[in-house]
Amino acid sequence: MTLPQAPGVEFAGSSDIGSVREENQDSIRLPEDGCPLERGLLYALADGMGGLANGKLASSMAVNALFESFYAAKSPIPKSLGRGVELANSKVFGAAQGLGPSRMGTTLTAVDLLGDELWIAHVGDSRAYLIRDGKAALLTNDHTTVGDLVRMKLIPADKVRTHAQRSTLNRAVGLGLFVRPEVSSVRLRDEDRVLICSDGLWSVIEDEELGSMASAAGEAEGLCSKLIAEAIGRGSDDNVSAIIVRVRKASPAGGSPRRGKNVAEGYGRYFSHLKAFIGR
Image 1: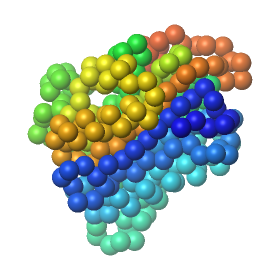
Image 2: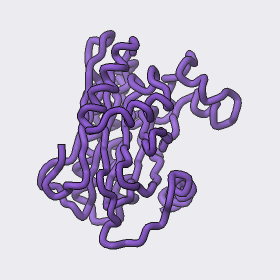
Image 3: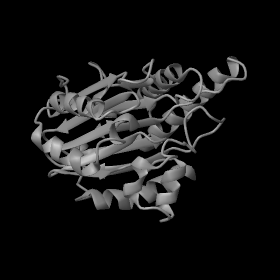
């Protein structure tokens, strides 16, 4: 779909229970008519932790808290996103305390598109990808035991999907009083696509395939449906959720100059953004 105030952006999102689980513990939220355009278009996906109680409650609470906080804020986009994730964490953690000894938690991955700049806030092992020219570039880190092993170069990245501890999270929303989200940004170009997905999808579809499938599918809704159907057809053992954002025309917000030219520059700015956010 497209919003009247943002004709250059097309998006779609869907969540499926899959063929194994008894409950869909994923939650997604998309921009709505009337959202303040000066704050950008916000998209969020959360995957409730299936090994804990109330995973669905945790994921829905997280995305809703983030949206409410972000659009009510007046601070710059990266700070608003980071604080929105922190507020979501506080709400989920507080709700868990009210339920007694049970714990609940969720991943939370969100992107805000403002002009041609994409801001990403992330906790957990859901993923955000930038798909450009038929290639998919991962924009987030997996906050898992296996993700740490990859970053320490103890195992290759291509072993993540088959590792026995792939889903063992070491950072998630709601597990503790505080959480440290990753906040980063990247500049977009015309016809770029952004994919946010739960591990029920990316665990069975390789990054290279995501790029080729995006090239074969034109509209966002068609690609979203195709990815979910493919993941379920390949025997995904989890809920499967995806959000696709297609940028038909990327234009700088407020006439601001373009600061980056490619994904690599976005990664370069990631560390400075994160350092500034943590040290605020």
